[in-house]
Length: 414
Image (cartoon, rainbow, N blue to C red; front, side):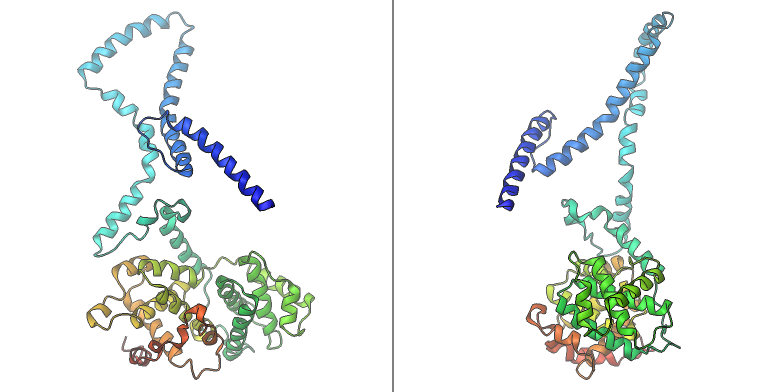
């Protein structure tokens, strides 16, 4: 009943807002009726465009009022008005044209970057504006999309994972792979978001390379605590700490998890904003006009790469580019001419990676997928064998001759 009353109240409030807006919008000539949100936006924008002109006129009136009390100034103002009119008629409105458009030009200062982007993209062949259709939807913030992803690329360079960071530690790459494979199963049991799994692995890698005195007995504690932190960061309803104690079969207590949480948070300096491969994959799928099959298969490649230590040092944007490249290459037409254009100019433009940059990681990803049946780590494969993931891990394309050829290519030949 409470929800029904809320709906009724919101509908009444919306009707009142619409009535008020209709009376105000009709005053502005040349404006057509739109939805309630559209009217609010148009009303605010038009008033902002008109305000500078009214302010200048008010300032002029104030100036006249200030100079008015002086009697000596009044006859001078009246005398000077007549020759000004004659000068303006002789010179075709030079001064008004310079003064009046100044506020409008200041408001349009933010538009040139769009023209620069369009002109830059027009120089490249077959580069499309993938945000063109989203300009009418304010929730997608298409104006800031390119700036957001540029900022994400700066963040991934600020928080890198170095290659071979486990050298000299008691924790081995095999131990890490066993831990990540187990966390994939825990992630499924808790029904967590996709971002939580990627952030958990990122926290583990960054912590192990910064805090190099973790032994094998506390490695599982690090993994559980990393997921506990990732749940607080990503999930709306985070699992209770007792659930993590139960999932470890009471191997660690609640106090030990809280102590490890404090250690991880202080070691990473409270910074968990490193971008995830999933963020870039969504952008690339949009740029490449990927189908749901391509996107799901690319996610399967990404989660398989999480398990293996050899892939953890690559930037998230590069791993996502390799995943979508391999998905397009496998699930597509058999024509050689169309396979040449798998990595289009639009994908190269928005990913900032060329085909030569992506293909070495594509080869390593393909070798992991080809050997997935023989691997000891089967959590990701079992996960994507379910119907809700379109049974991607069971598709015959993953064992096709194309995949075998790509996996067998040497780095030197690329």
